[in-house]
Image (cartoon, rainbow over all chains, first blue to last red; front, top):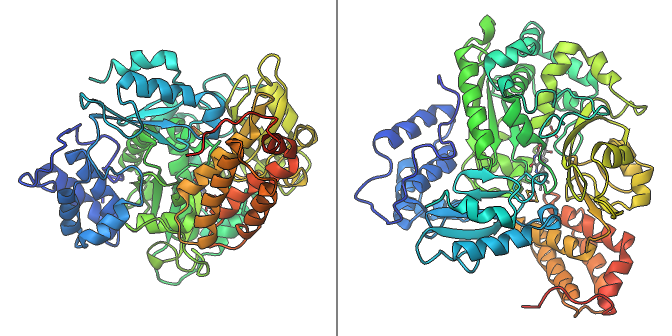
Length: 181
Length: 435
Ligand SMILES: Cc1cc2nc3c(=O)[nH]c(=O)nc-3n(C[C@H](O)[C@H](O)[C@H](O)COP(=O)(O)O)c2cc1C
Ligand code: FES
């Protein structure tokens, strides 16, 4: 072990946005396989690499498709059913395809006190998503409501993909969205 | 606070001294600011001496429970021949809390140094830092700092030539509040669903990978190098009269104050000074209605309680709540307390891992009853029903998520009953439509 980080950081590996299940291009090949192999010595079990491997799969496919799930299971020697049980426990793994830019908006009490409902309404309107969890007709955005993002002093924080944006107000939204084509 | 506003004269900047100073993020910048002296000093001491130093400082866990850090470290077995682990809890998801994020963003090496000292003290060669998945920027800052620490032998096979091997590995979470609970976090790190475990066995006997493990919060570990460099006596001296609560604490203040942010106080600072002087008080024309002082899992406080409260572990308990994680949610007189409590119950219902019946059902039922009250269809018996359910949600489950949901409900009904009754009597117009 030389480098210390597990190397599965937010947004590493580039923003591959293919939302199709494309098993003919294996996820764990080339650079991605190297990254995973570099993780194994950092843990006493292969299973401990499940969350990191799922992050890699989601980067590659945009979501944890049934095919991706099977590939993750195979590379770690787990069953697909087990992996599915883990995937569904966590809110950040997508179990269905989402828009190119996935937007998470905090509406927990501290942010609610400071107007997060207005931010959410404005985002649903200006992205064209209309309702929570729906993807806009152009495939650009999906907006969901999430619980405390750990930035309550900067209301309202939102995440667009891996970009963490603080102090969002309804007025700022159209400007922010212009950066996400 | 140091970021985004300059530090207030009433603060005691130790951990937050370099918040906002981007140069402090690099290895070199940290060393120029006195960094890694604590680790060097620790490596020249026996592990037992480091543990004693922590005990003498009075440092208590900053993650919520306030357990004495030196004592926790002393529970680790000695000479058992097994690998030991240190885990740093960087899952920070307790509503109202945003201090660990700032530590990782601005002073990553303080945390790495604290982790390395902790490893030495408990006989571990490896520390996992479990960072919540949403913390993308802290992840990048921490990654860069860990790489640099390895390059300068502050981590690796032979730390600063001491012959000691210390590894730090970052592990990314994937969205689950419950993974901040220490045993849920260990399951998650092992590649499992984040269900809390029944204790005993306690982590010091069988924790991560069933091996002896110590788990500490980011802020706890970040304080460790300062204690070593400046001495336990100095830290213990940071105290305003209550020798059980020593040192500084980052208080994340959010909600209806003029200047929300992280404030580093000497424990014992009057809460009213914090809210009205440091944070600038309420917005113009507004008055204080309630404070949740320790993250959403603790009871609400009234303005009268706030007025006489010393902000430390015992002081807040004496005034009807708890210091918890130090996430302070301030609400002014424009606040609909019933709605905010409903929103918190909804949070806990969403985040329950659903293992225990009292929690799975209790968080869902209380949320539904609160929604019914807010929709103008509450029954006169609903408040008693909520209190009864809360009773069954307290002290009955594997972890305290369920208790955490009950705390704001029970204290809300006890301290702000008129707000609930106004919905029941239809004096307050409904704000929710029942699905
Ligand atoms: C539901 C729940 C969530 C928790 N979330 C966190 C968290 O996000 N961060 C944290 O440090 N501790 C959290 N804790 C407390 C941890 O279980 C544990 O006590 C703490 O990490 C110990 O570190 P300390 O002794 O340094 O405070 C949580 C506890 C519970 C019951
Ligand atoms: S409540 Fe919104 S970030 Fe914490």
